[in-house]
Image (cartoon, rainbow, N blue to C red):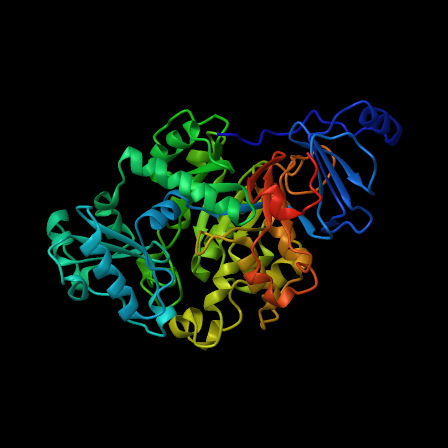
Length: 497
């Protein structure tokens, strides 16, 4: 697995020395006649040995490959600050219910899969009752059409529904077959993949990420997944965040490491977020216990990604992370329900790692309004307020679904003023913002000399037609100067080798 090391020793050349250097070197790749996102003065990018070595007006350089982009837009490679590659890959290779628009469709697809699959247990992912315009979860009775065990994860992965056979196999039962948070973790072993399936899932997920213009991810993972990623060659740079419960003092100082992921609450969809008026035990820590928990990792030199969704959790997370001494960069994951006074207290070393694709539930009658009431309507995920407050914002997907353009489209086109940001701001959050979170802003997240040649070729109308940007798919993805998605032939007929 390739990993993005810091670029501490790179020094930008003067204009004269750079010109002399270029004249005597063969480039690996030159992209010209391009629209460089955020740089109207440049139309050419040159790459050598995986790095960008020239950004500017078109010039005559010797190169192994020169590609005419015909006015297509070139953006930095997207850095997804919060993914679950294993879950993504398993959903692709097992039963994927994320596209089913009615309960009946989801159940029928499950029946068909159970009938055709040779697996001993049916494991499905991605169902969302709110996408069907409903409030009721799938139940065990609806899945008792077969003696084969069935386990279906809700889209947020904070809940699963098991049929009677699966509960019997697990030796645990819950009302309606609904398992959430701690109880769900007790039965997760039912869905554990073997080594071959795990490797196949990670490769599938890596390919999918590349197809969406992603060149790097911070992946939330178990230790076993981290061990596999060290050995696999997938087309994205991976920075691992280990679940806190998986940490037992292992030596994690290796090239595919970021820090620790800890939980303060659950999710809105499973009613397990720390939201005023909901169950008090949705908030996992007291302030004192949380401080002790965090210091265990900080003392070992590890930053923490703090999962906090409800307003009670976001408030406690901000207070706790602000107390961390030094300049270690921690993050708050999701940061969905935020009171104004909470945002004011966010410290300089705290990065807000949010998901613009969550705005899919922010419309009239969507999850936020139907579950929380009108009080938070249009006020969740306040990206506009976050940026206006000068806070660090990084974008990710939480793989719900994975795809930066989809989330960017929602953030740019939302009707709610507290959420709406510009295209430049949204792309920056998915590139520069995430690079800052990873402590790699010196070599990732920009189209600039010395940076990794991680690039996305978008359509020529990428900037001009922002209303439909959420439906746009990248033409090609380049990581370290190597094409990881698309073909040179699909980019333009004037590509020269």
